[in-house]
Image 1 (cartoon, rainbow, N blue to C red):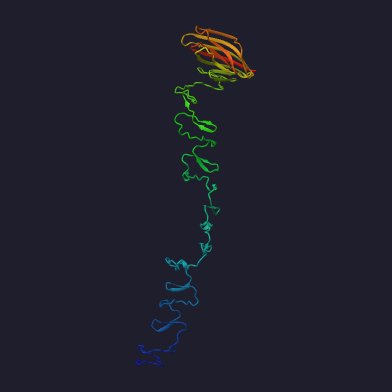
Image 2 (cartoon, rainbow, N blue to C red):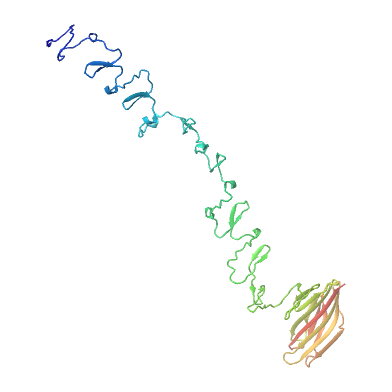
Length: 409
């Protein structure tokens, strides 16, 4: 067939056509031969028009019929599928906006439920590491008991018996104070432990060096009395460097000692009797008959005139008898003159009235210049006294010793 150069318009058909296709326009689709229904027209491998059921991936299609499919279209190694999204479908760096997720219950904690499905709960359960309680308005220390949480203050049971809490973790108190419980049982402190709590209530830190004693007067302690080796008033006697003691007057009210004597010692033996050592006297109280006593005394003084002066005064007891033996020595310091008196008499106190009997025996030995001296017993109120009479304008030294036995009636 020769090449058609003229433009063909209208109804003109030819079984074959060779040429450049120039000049063929507006050919009606019905004029084309029919193909396979519902297929996609393509150029086949030879360039001829053909058709396929589904457009394959090489031509930009999916290669699958999705008319009955549900899901998301995915392609794997060139093969398309319609399915659901899986974890592998989401890029590790997808950073999907949270606003694109469905909203859950407001202000709740997101969790996986028992089936692994994302859900939420108001308070994170203790099985998931939470407390299971709302502590938005709580105050105190969180505690758990048998899996149940609570918020409260610490009590004694919360502290382990072997806690051994470091003292440095306790709040500091007042320096150098004694820790106590106050009247409300609250731990506090005081500078000196009060007497009511077994202390002294006093600060003895500045008492000073040396031995001191603590005294207690009506619950008030003091350190005013000290030991001393000297014969010091209001002090306790302390042995000196040689082991000796120095006292002005040794006074005791009762001594009970062993009857075994030691060589060189003054031994006071009393198994049935009481022995009292007072000022210049020894008193022994028999126990066989109540009210009996035997006393020894020694006194001395100095006179410068002839006025009667009491060398010794003895207090009597109502309804008592006294038998008295006296030895008195005297001397005149300016000379070698000496003298001696010995006498005995009795005294009685009847209902408070004291009478002194006549001297039963009296003997004297007096040097020249002492002939006017004398020793005279007399009553004085409820006492009896032993007066000495010296010499006018003359110094005379007197010393007397007395043995007195008494019995009440």
